[in-house]
Image (cartoon, rainbow, N blue to C red):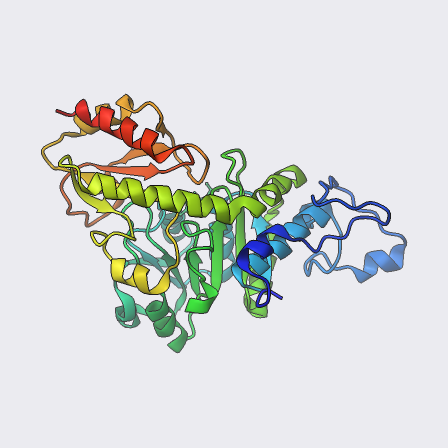
Length: 389
Ligand SMILES: *Cc1c(COP(=O)(O)O)cnc(C)c1O
């Protein structure tokens, strides 16, 4: 089905069937803890572990099952499981696939809470965790051990934005029978078609572009292999990873406009990144579509879009106090984590604290470009730059 429909059509159509005599576009919000069975035979025929029907509110309602089915189709996979946040989806993958004695490979530039979780697994659960250079490509072969059970990737890496060679990492991993998980949040599954490039498990923070509203937290794990889906499903059930129907509805409501928003974020961010590249205050623009960005050639080869999130390095002559003042002087750009919504944001990062081998001098600031007019955003950046002088 996904082969025939264009992406935008996929985002705007639903297979949900409303009750006889009532037709409307939205998926209804179903609330239930108790799910009722017609008789004992019906109760016995449904298996909550397999999610082969409605059994209990925690394990899904027509609202959440519809969202899962739509996300699987949009990402190009066969199955999806929802989690209450992007980070919860990451945890579900780790706990589904790792056990004591196993080895986990994580890129140096991974989303920091993913690393925090890995450190916990390493400290208290006897799992070894090793960090690799995100640009390692085929070289990851040398790091794979007989007990390596999972390789995390992120494209591009959080904050520092290096673009990894996902197909090369997948080839090396598959040659040794190791599954590859990708945090595909940055591209929303629009700018990078993960399964086409060999990824086994896709994680999305729906909190970002899928919702687009800056008002809901949710994550998803999408697979296309039944064995992996079964393992993630067992973790989903054992951990009690339920999401509310109201929240699922907010994500469903964002889907039809997701690609239009993503393309608008993308076009605006590229214009602003180009403008920043021309500024004497900025030493490097870490935007995958710009040649300054490590892994830019791989982005060009594998990606079809970039969205609104990128970082810049200020010239090393500016102190942290000065760039903090720059951020405080912005009026349209607000200060806050998360991203993917309509409003532009700026966040400073102390890179030495989150990357072991960070060598770039100069303060790093990450921008989320929202849906405001580009000329107004540039004017805002320009007036704040004047405070640096
Ligand atoms: C935001 C984010 C997450 C986590 O999503 P939450 O819903 O905030 O937990 C994971 N990975 C990346 C790359 C993110 O930007």
